Image 1 (cartoon, one colour):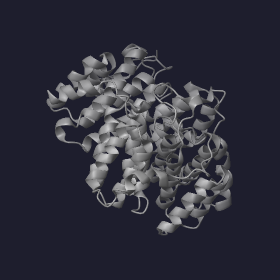
Image 2: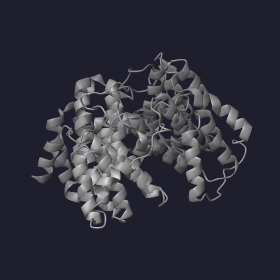
Image 3: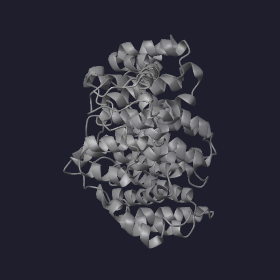
Image 4: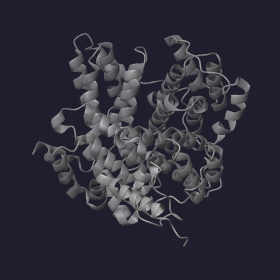
Length: 524
């Protein structure tokens, strides 16, 4: 060992005190602590003052954990702090490599958004539902002792910042150690640099979980803190490396291979984006073009729209409307794909429409916070993915018509003049409980025709998004629809709610584990 000066020794002592106080993960993300020689060496990741609650969520069985969290909440721990600790426990345990684990991470901010819409006395309920799933899966995984995320390996004395392409090539090379090292060095620059470098890796394949994961991690930073950008976003790096080891990973690569051609042809990287207003007819036309085209044609249509100077967010709305058509037209799960929790005819869970809606929502929102290169890439790939999903996952979506169909509305026609908005809402509730997707879609359309209060219908649908299992997608898709509805043009916004009503009717009858216990705790 080389001799050290007194100043160097005292500096190391001071750094150690900081790490002990704020946690090794935060200290690294702030550039205050070195990385270790290889993954797993050195101390475990720690999260400072949050560590006790993080460990409780990792090392306590789900049923025992719920009353402990409720008690902390009653004593003043905020909803945001509970979600933040759950996100850190999830990331440290699974590191983006467990199917149920990363679905649970992606449900955390939707659960928090739902909680903020509810009366204070029961606002913790949707969060407790997701915490129960989180702790159950962590226990199955092996608890704190089984965690996958450790301090990252790289030489902290290197000051050169790797490029996103270097990270991309390391991921393509299936080298997790080098990918983690390069990303750690990028992340020291800023959360935005970390996010945009991850996007260039994610864009290599438009598989739904690969797309949605970085968006949900980015959303969580508002709660967890931007100093944890490295810990949350590295889940995507590890997910992508693992995906490269899958022999079926070429399934949806075509969009990324088209990007360089469209960038060059339309000079998208050499000029600022336009702000030209788009009217309803233009947005509707572009959404139909995206939906009806081949994947490459849909991508080219978006590139042309950017070239013509239309505002990126108007283009993003067209992408989400096109994705919504996949849900409105879906005839349901075929018998050959039926499962106990997703029977024949169901459209909840990992259906074409739910996946497409969540992906399009992620692309649109990532485009809002990305650098210029990734704004264009997100919108182009969002369109490409919608068209790809329509043509690759089965079903004659162009021949099928969006719900509600005329025969679906017959039930309501005879009493249409007598039914108030409240009456129609009761009809929707009954349709959900009967698993009647057709009547649910017709009732929602009738509610919109009567200018029913959106808060009332979202309260109803939110209740079922909490009570039902939803095959890992209930919270996330409710958030997708409530967000799109709030931002959509009046001419289009009810389309999203009709889709959510179908999903809710599809998923009813399979109560989520832990919700009954959580209700008792909150009402006690």
